[in-house]
Image 1: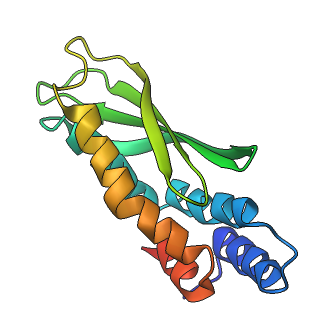
Image 2: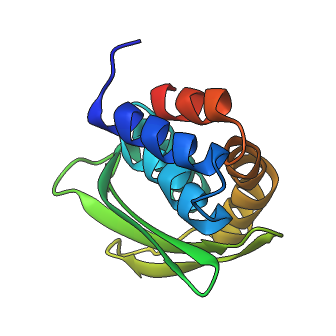
Image 3: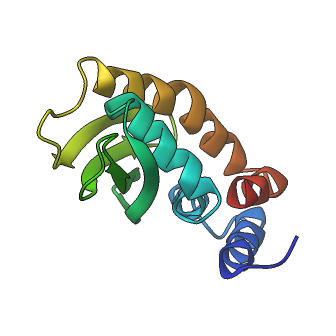
Length: 153
């Protein structure tokens, strides 16, 4: 696998983790940042789109930031997608919070579509993040091989 800047960063941060010099939150931020980069970002954008606007097309990551505050990781994902009818793209943004012990929650930060998020869409997204993505991140934080796989999916 070629060493992209993200892979190099993950490798360096996880090497520090093995020495005990980098706390869980710092490692979790590094692993979560891998979701902001292609190819993983395509899967994240598609998951957000499928939960919030299942009939939309062409989802892509439009912006992503990952920070931490008081032991909580805060990931903000902004996607852009198209209507089946074409025209200008729409934007949907979410903020996801979790810590070392659990998924905390997800909130819609913005949505530019005229119809808004489909009923039950945020609940579906909550379930996907809690039951699928959070466990992968939590496991990868202490497993360098798994973390590198997240960055190269």
